[in-house]
Image 1 (cartoon, rainbow, N blue to C red):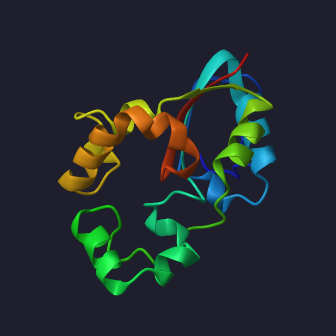
Image 2 (tube, rainbow, N blue to C red):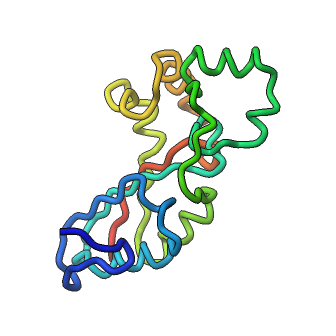
Length: 162
């Protein structure tokens, strides 16, 4: 079944689970996207929501202007340890900052943030971090990651409909 993320071809309260994986940045009306997910979810339904973060320091999709200002040697080191990839200049849709995206989600859902738990997990981190050095760095930085959530490269949330 195909349809617009803003007008899903489904009845109200039809699903227990919705997966919204790396979608929001391609949808012009993010508030409408969250409203549509809430419309099709049953009460206490869940949405797995993963998203790139505008201010994610290691997110190649962001094409952050400051990364281009780093010395070529620094960028080369970041690529070698797997924090950024060689194709980091790639851009993906319209990314939003952590607090803005979370506020939009919170209008319809309880937001359970699993980002830090996943990025520091030896089992789960390989799905999100490109190199062993990056995974080791995340585990080592684990205790401070909750303080820097707004600049982590991705968000991994479970959204719970009231």
